[in-house]
Image (cartoon, rainbow, N blue to C red; front, side, top):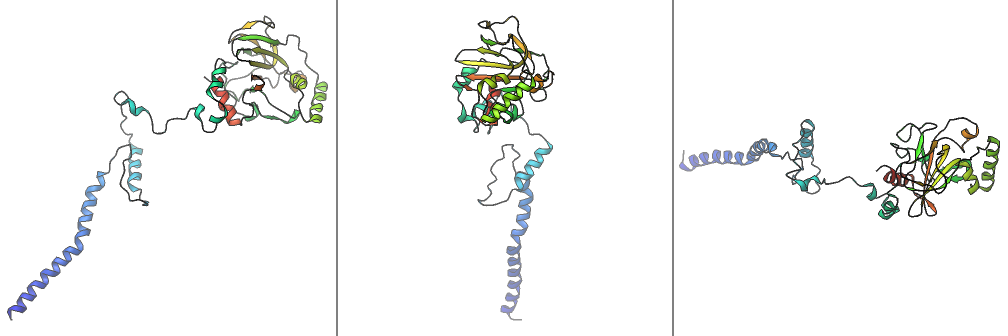
Length: 298
């Protein structure tokens, strides 16, 4: 065989082997690198950047990491060594800074009424919109001007005869010692007037509040306590009271149950007036609840 032919047959197999090596080497080395690099994903709870290309939908590393943390809680960092890290990325929003309510009142208003407290210890703001200030009152064609405390809606039991306390220091402006309940027939006549006028005249509204106590506080603030069954025999108009002073007892006066002579439907109707407006006038139920919670649930 000539030398050229022997050299040709020797070189060709070597070239083929080298070509095969170049062709299959990416697959071989990529599998080896994948097996070595997969455990290298960080398990930091801060979820580091995985350098995923822009527009890519690949999320497997983050999903796998969350699955790992679903089984074992990451180590908590000490707040003593890292005081600056106590602030979370998305801290809880204060009700005062709630985007839905921030524009409806300011800190100056809250400062003005911050001395007030709940007239029923342990009670919270009702969970029912119909018992909030501003709720419509179709039966008299008017608007509710106070906050109602009923059993099952304010966090405590409300019973006929339970004590009511002053929400803040002030002076007794009105106290109904000689209140007389209207009979059902007379009450219905008053409601017909509301229907005819499509409004609730002030004198009728006052009658529907039943037995009341009014206290005058600083900054032109007045609190009203309505539907009482009794009032304190020791208090008279002009007397000074302190926050928490006993002023009367929960009842149902002024209501249809009161007119019928029963003890059903007992609750406290509580109003806060600032100048000529009741607290939360014109606000939505969500805004009203947030505002009243700031005042009473301190």
